[in-house]
Image 1: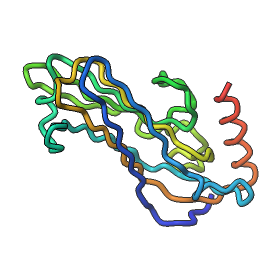
Image 2 (image 1 turned 45 degrees about the horizontal axis):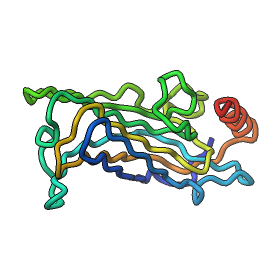
Image 3 (image 1 turned 120 degrees about the vertical axis):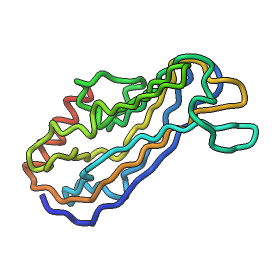
Image 4 (image 1 turned 90 degrees about the horizontal axis):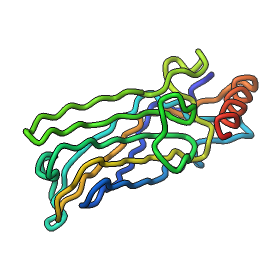
Length: 181
């Protein structure tokens, strides 16, 4: 595995609207970075999830607690295949996930349970190699967001472009194909 670029960041944000059990998904295109002919992929070093409250009437960032009417959990996941829903931790498509728990007494906790998945080949050096042309970012709030407010969830991905040996590229492609089933 040889690095072709220095580290750079990709970011994307989804908005969870007022109401109960809001969910949203967006994609992050990797088409400019992944090249099958050159066995080129993305090495994901770190993934951060940022959770913020928003007053939609003013567009201003507010305290997270100001957006919730009661206890709630907000979950975010980044995957390299579109499952159409949140996935369990043993799903090979899962790159990273995290959540924030809010207690209506203004107690919050944040956890990253897969940060990023490092179950891949040892050549990944503790990161996750992605050769698919898109990443799928999904967030869900379990609880009620008050009227005129939203939860903004941002994913920040630290990555670099790498060249893989033919054997490594083929192994990752086969693994990704198997995960698609």
